Length: 115
Image (cartoon, rainbow, N blue to C red; front, side, top):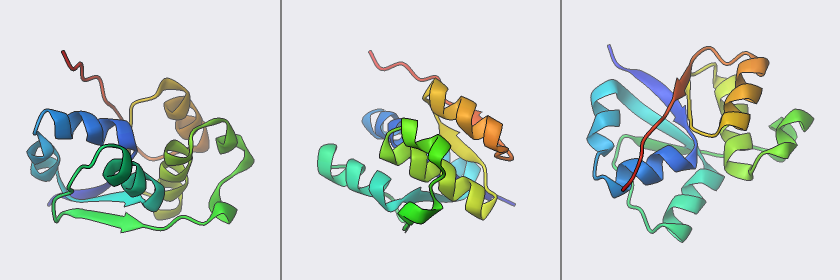
């Protein structure tokens, strides 16, 4: 049975550029992203998301003070992963460290290099 994962922006940009969203669909039934991540993807990168993506709003009230040192996408992704108790796909080291400290159940480290 495939599961669901929360994602930050960077890994999705990389997978889109490599035309490899299928890697996510092979592993996960659903990828949930905060609305700010969606905005970053469609506005800055003009990325069309596959049907297995779901956009979820995150209230500013849900974001803990500790997350304010991160960009909005990372902060909302961590907050959403904590709220929904789902694994988190995040590449940035500071974000991974904070998410781990907050107790996310699973962290998936992404190490992709685009040439």
